[in-house]
Image (cartoon, rainbow, N blue to C red; front, side, top):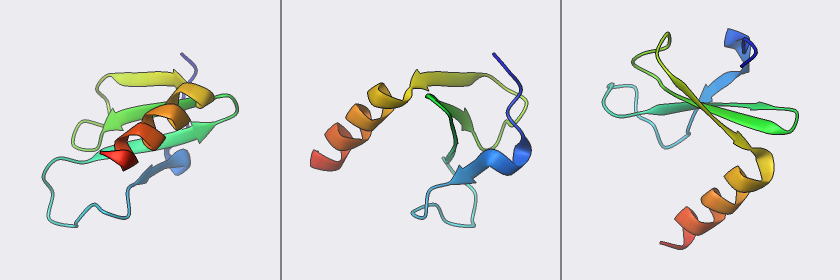
Amino acid sequence: MSTVPESAWFKSSYSSGEGGECVEVADCPGIVHVRDSKDEAGPVLSFASGRWAAFIEFAAQN
């Protein structure tokens, strides 16, 4: 996986500033990277943009 610049990562607008369970997302051309905001050096999941869009659409319905 290529290195994602720190400036590319963002948290959901639903995340509070109090910590807890948050994920960060970096939308790069053709791929979306997801990581745990509490472990920035930890593992990163990567999804094709279309697959991520399908997941978000599904999650919004439930």
